[in-house]
Length: 141
Image (cartoon, rainbow, N blue to C red):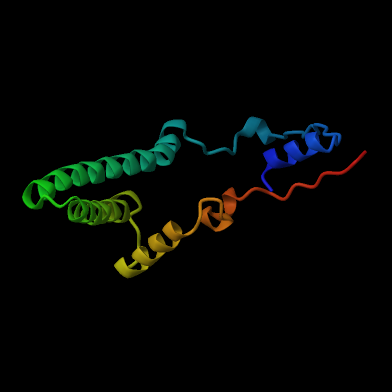
């Protein structure tokens, strides 16, 4: 259960919730920290930029191909299917090779993407283990 659900449950059942302070201890004023603000922030945010650029490239391919196939055939269904297959392939390829620099084989990456696409967004398997919400226990006091 996500932490927010635990708070909603506590409010609904009129349970007591209290804040517990946690002491933070830094040895030698945190001298052992190796955090580099610019370098480490770039490592965090550059993949987001890459995903955004891959999405934009896929969008442009989708738009151009949809218009081109529609102009050539006059068939909306065929135009949409062709545009989505090609733009999805472009997006997949850019994300696999450029954004993720994946070491997976093409088949492995395709199966992984298909698996994540097929899972509902609320499934806990859609998130890596480190982002899954901890189990929250509530009790009456």
